[in-house]
Length: 136
Image (cartoon, rainbow, N blue to C red; front, side):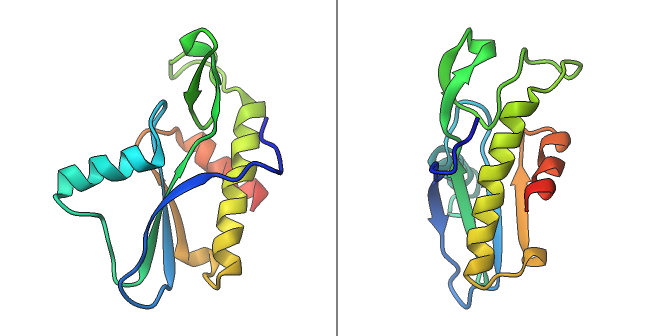
């Protein structure tokens, strides 16, 4: 479970102009924020950048991951197996939602309103992302 003392490592692309929105882009299992940023840069042949939007690529904390037989991996939450019909590991989802809510709160404290913050993932289940709202 996530601890209040944990702070997510982040790779940032700062806006070229006045910062008025933030995009939090979550990586897939076993990757990192820096790895996702590098992949996007390879696909686009440049950083994903906007005049008014800060792009934040956080890295999930390392944790034991059940599908890897308990091996350590950067994953947002644990799961019993990789399958759409498998129940979620709710305790680990709740912990990550708290960490992501803290990240959102950091953006709000810097002057960005919640309706100008977008959380995006290319691999996560919608159920996980919906749970973030409970903590923010």
